[in-house]
Image (cartoon, rainbow, N blue to C red):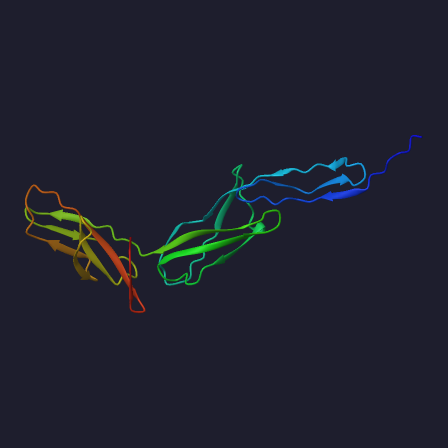
Length: 193
């Protein structure tokens, strides 16, 4: 008796890849004899999740960067495979979190971060025998500037001025100075790095 076997198809469930494990596509096998009709294919694991840009300059408007997500083979994972939610704020300087929730053929929830920063000025120095004049261009939206020494000790808050002269310096000695920007928002001061 050579009866012909007709397969009864049964799905082999897909396994979603995560950041630590590869996944598998759905497959099909015969529920009676166990023969695989459509084999499962490996789906590469998620290898990298990061904000599209990790630092953004303060503008006073909400900033919501996208993310760049790649798998272990370096391929970009399409945005149709995840949703993004952002921590509150997004307007003030600080560090913010993006929560990535995977869907479709991927699973898991992961977080990455980005910063909103106050821009630093770019000071230039002109020297004489016993003094140095620091000058810099105006940083858009800045409330003021603070000059610091090499140990990051505050020398002077110069307000909105874009230059400051330090005198009584010793000839032949190297001095290092920094200038930070600050922005006052609703009574609170935020500083550049």
